[in-house]
Length: 241
Image (tube, rainbow, N blue to C red; front, top):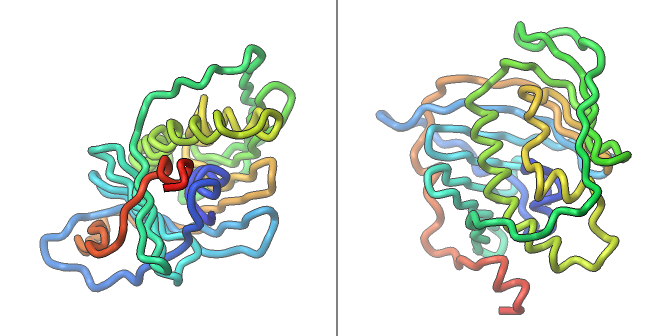
C-alpha cells in the first residue's frame, strides 16, 4: 500500500493509493493544514502524497490521481481505507493490544548532526534502533507542525491494534523487530523527535516533506465517505468472509 504512515502497516491490510481532486472550497467549511510529500516504496520511483489535517479528520491521498484515499476520524478513532476501483471501504477500529512483547525488546534513539533548516526550523538527524537493527533514519524539526504530529500519532496508535492481530497471525520469524516496534509496540515513534522532514526505513521506504500550507479552507465533502461503497473489516478478510 502506498503512502500512509507508517509504510508497512497499511500495505498488509489493503491496496490503497491516491487522491480525489480537491474541489473549490465552500463557504463556512473547515480549515486545515495541508502537507505535500514525496514518497518511495522499496527504493522505487517517487510519487506524490497529500495529507490534510483538521481538528476532526486526517485525510491521506497517496500517489495522487487514482481516487483512493484514507480517512481517519480523530474523534472516534476509526480509519477508513477507500478503494475507488472496487467501491469498497476497509474499516479499522481502535482496540487493545494483547500481543505479548518479546522478552528482549529494546528501542534506542541515536542523535546525529544538524542538517540545516526547513521553513526556519532547525533540522537534526536521528537513527532509531530496535535491539541491534536500525529501523529508521530520520531528519526532523523539533517544533515543526505539532498539531499534525499529534494527529498522525493518533492515527498510528489506532492502526496498531489491527497490526497486532496481523502479527499474531503471521508465521514466526516473518515479523522483524522493526515491524513489531514501528507498527505495534511503539507506533508513531518516527515523530518522537519532532516532525520528520525525511524518513527512511530499513526497507528503503522513504517520505520527504516538500511543503505545507496552514489554515487553508477546504470543502466538507472531502471528509464524507461514499454512501454506496461496501464497508468491511479486516476480520472479515482474515475469516474469509
